[in-house]
Length: 139
Image (cartoon, rainbow, N blue to C red):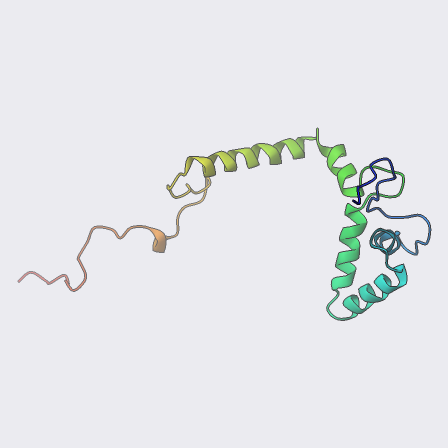
């Protein structure tokens, strides 16, 4: 029976320092999945040529994969740095407010922000002549 060895090193997906050309994304992913990094570079180059998808994938991987020897990525470092800032707290409070509104199951239409009025076409029709009736001059 083949059992997993829990004492050996755990393979982690990370950007490597050895074999990097730009940020080590292709060399890190290649090492993780067991493929030559040049094949991944070629695939990303082709994807970049046809629609630019390769550049986006590389940029996202650069932000999300931690560098070799570190435990957090660039994106995680930025989030942790700004976690106590007023912008983060403001976004979190707005998210909590929206989420509580979703949880209550409110079916009311949202109220317009102060200073803004609803467009006339979105309002209920004013009391007046009904459709098909016209004002007739009195004789």
